[in-house]
Structures are given as C-alpha cells and as structure tokens.
Image 1 (cartoon, rainbow, N blue to C red):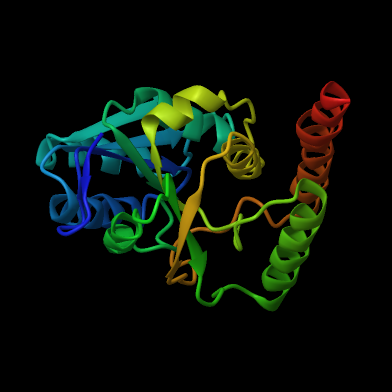
Image 2: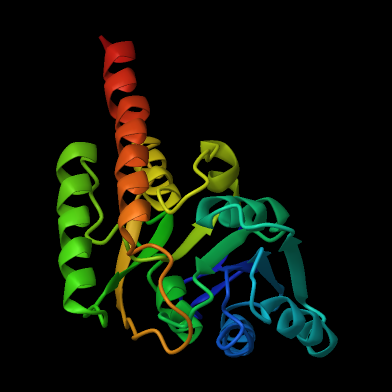
Length: 246
C-alpha cells in the first residue's frame, strides 16, 4: 500500500458511494469520481450501493455500468440504512485505499486529490472538514450541537466527525469491525480508528447545498432514533471500554 508524496498518488483506490433516492445526482458523482481517481492512481474502482431507492437510482446505475467498466453496482432490495449501505460498500471494496462520500453531491469527488496530498507526516488516513455548511439554519444548528455532543462524550479528536469525505486504508477498515446500520456509523468508525492509535490528516473541503432529493436524517423520529443509537455507542465504546481498563 504505497504512496508517493511527491506525486500525490496512491497504489489503488476504491471509491464507495452509498445512494438512496439519488437518481438526479449519482451519475455526476460517478463521473467526477472517475476523473479524480485517474489523477491519484492507475488502479481504481467505483462501488455504488443502491440502498433500496424508490426513485430511478437503480435504472441510472445499471445504465452507467455500460459506460464505466470500473463501476460495481450493488442493489439492496430494501432500504437497510446508511451504515448498512456503507458496510456493504466497504466489504465489496478490493483496492488498498477506500475513499467514500455520499451520493447526493453535497461533496465534490474531485477534491479526493486533497485527501491524497494530505497523507504525509505520519498520517494513516485523511478526513475532510467543511469550510462552510451549506444547509438550512436548523440543520446547521443541529449539526453543531451534534458535533459538540460527540466531541465531549466520545473525546473525538478530529474537528468534523460529521464530514463524510474520507480516505482510509482498507486494512484499517477490516481491522475495526463496524456494526452500525445507521448514520451513527461515521462516529463509530472515527472513534474506533482513533482508539486504535491511527492518525487522521485533516483538509478543508467544500460542502454544497442539496440539488436533488431531501435529507433522510432531519426528521424528528430519525433524530430520536439517532440519539438512542448514540447512547448505545457511548455505552459500548466508552463505558464498557473504561470498565475493561479498570
């Protein structure tokens, strides 16, 4: 799993996109990802997990396979959740490095080059942080509250655990054994990686307003469910771990 700092390239990369009702954005994400991947490696693949979409995401992805031979499409017959889709994508990834972001175009895959360039000075993985958050005021407030909450209770060191724009060695993902099926997987992933002693390089990335579809998170019942899942993670990753140490 080599990296040449002078060229900003890595040995091989799997780009993973979970997609749920992203029919209006996933084609541009795949196209942009292929452009970015060619800039950082000669060996790459794109893995898109269609998590039981009810729009035309499945049709678009099946058409894209004819254009992009490096594209691997996995269809969940029913919606299993963001974390479940990510885990499916990670399990399917075959390359040395795994880059992932969402399929809704709120991040630009072309900025993958920034993550690769950041893999210096002993960094094991690279994490983006939002320059500004292009969401509604309510989402910005909830996002800041969430980040403050997990920063305090989980002792997360990176500045933006809510930024789903990451480049991680596949060997680390294989090592940490993820369990979450919801959006809580991002917190679980970062916490387990940091607890294992690995270091993230951090780079600023752009965050864009959603052009297609609606967020699946910012509804009351999902927020309540997420808080319950956070409590479960706190019990497993903090309380039980401290008890074992004692």
